[in-house]
Image (cartoon, rainbow, N blue to C red):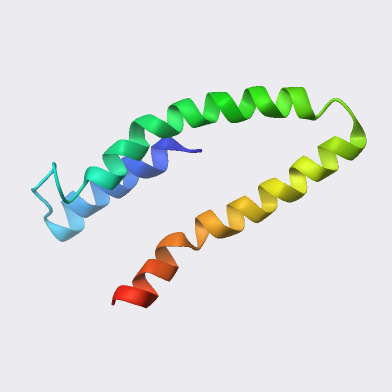
Length: 83
């Protein structure tokens, strides 16, 4: 949950692709720019609650690895399907 990634993507789309239609074209990233700040707080709180035992900590880390894999490949998959 890194809102700074959405900010960087917005900046890159404006700079390198001359995107000017902020409302429609950048809507996805603008939503995540704000929502990911909330997500980060929630995840941090949940991890604090879950990671009170070594077994739960390992389970949480495995789930995080899986989530990161899918999040990191989300746009790659979108490009593969639509481009």
